[in-house]
Image (tube, rainbow, N blue to C red):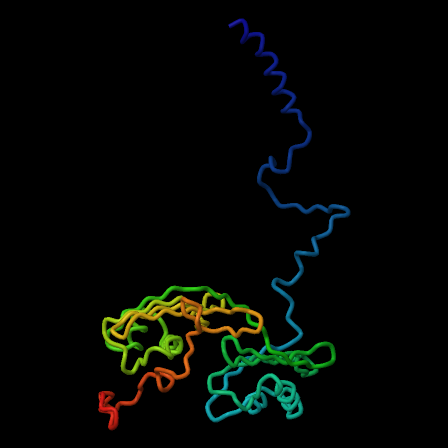
Length: 286
């Protein structure tokens, strides 16, 4: 009780000082009519008045698709290019790619400068890895083949043959384009028209080429093994270096290439509706 009596005068004195304070902070003022004030030297930030987003580029970007029964020249003409500009693009690209070889659904990009109508860029996509362009460098146009970055991995593929080599490879989740590469590896030892039987197996290590995450195509087969009624065959890709040519070799170092092919012609999937079980008129087998 004595301590409280000693502190009480100090508390009363502090309250009197607060009550006599001449100015209050702006945030402490009671609600009332809004007032304006001028602050000398304070200017609004210039960033508050800049447009949102990047400035408009000084060119127009156009895209085109080659339609059936049309040409690149006609497609460019429809986008506003003059005959002289089209002829320049064609002549510059000719050493790298012939625009007369275009196919339907191939695409291209076109960039035209505002005001002048000059061609700044023409890029033609003949395939995922076949990209050609004509670009302006200073006052001149120059053509080149664009190097598309790719990633190559080595993948292991194992397949058991059921009805046919083609369908067995597809059943394993691989593209049918792998068939011809497999046949080419064993072309000197196995006739896949006659020697391939259900239950045969083969294993390969093959290069797979990707553009970012998109699979583009197969590369070389690095190693391969075939097991079936015809026997067991193994072959390996090797580059000896120097004057010795690269190619496929057996495990003992001999070349896998022989004088004659076991497969008489390049293997292709039969796409016609004819009955494939036909008897050979001379050799007698089906």
